[in-house]
Amino acid sequence: MFIVYAIYNSKHNKIYIGQTRDINLRLKMHSDKIFHNSYTSRFDGSWEVVYTEKLPDRFLALKREKQLKSYRGRQFIKNQIPG
Image (cartoon, rainbow, N blue to C red; front, side, top):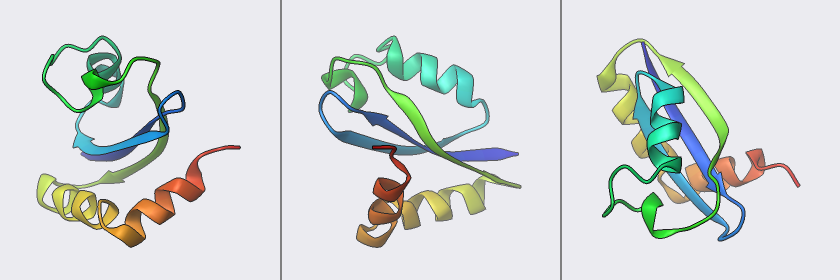
């Protein structure tokens, strides 16, 4: 099982979309800035999960991730952000 997710940093109004097997571990990695040169490590403040979707395999997860990274997909994610 793979999870496509979107996280949001309200301090900088930034969205990150990715896929993983373990959403809790991945959120911790983003929040703790484990990868110093990654996109999410560039922004201080906390990241919160605003969208998740479970898919049966990595191929479908990557396909859905790509869809969500499109203009229409990002608009969909923006509508999921509270407030």
